[in-house]
Amino acid sequence: MDQFAEVIIKIKEAVDLVDLIQEYIPLTRRGRTSVALCPFHAEKTPSFTVYPESGHYRCYGCGKAGDIFDFLLEKEGWSFREAAEILAEKLGISMDGVFARERDPGAKRLDVHGSLGKVRDWFGQVLASPAGQEVRDYLESRNLLVMAEEFGLGAHPKQPGALHKFAAKYGLPMQVLEQAGLLSRGGQREPFAGRAMFPIIDERG
Image (cartoon, helix red, strand yellow):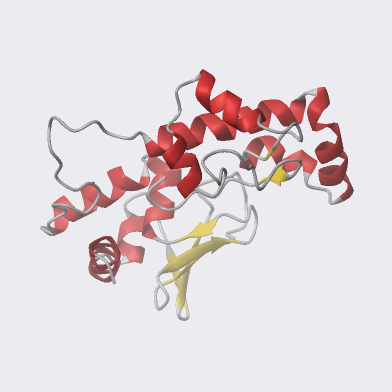
């Protein structure tokens, strides 16, 4: 288990989900659970349910669900990192080295997330263009096209070398794209050409 996972587990174990949520809305005990009017959508009958034993909540009205971090991200608009650091500070848990390792101040930093974010946005543009028609048809056949914007879905152009040219044009580090599996053979091969692209975002963004 890495340091990040250990710290997140410590925070989850130290924070009482019921106490946290009651700082925002009143909860009513119902057996092993607690219920309330959902803080994320308007309703007249309580459908927001908190499960203390498993440390998660679910609204059976709007479908919102998650743990302490999901609640704070949704309610406060914080990033996962902000929520983790704020909770850790309150609990006296050290976050040193959890999100970033010390590096040589003179060393050039590879912007991994920024580079992949640009590629993701470009795939989205391709999906909306004539070049993405085939992928749009596929997503539509699976009833997924309506989710394209919400989940950042995209299309990798069929044209050979398209991604390599895009990366070169905007100065994106080829090694980052190769490590992500988007390029191979020194940038000469693009394994996902012509395919629908589904970006994956972890808890750290």
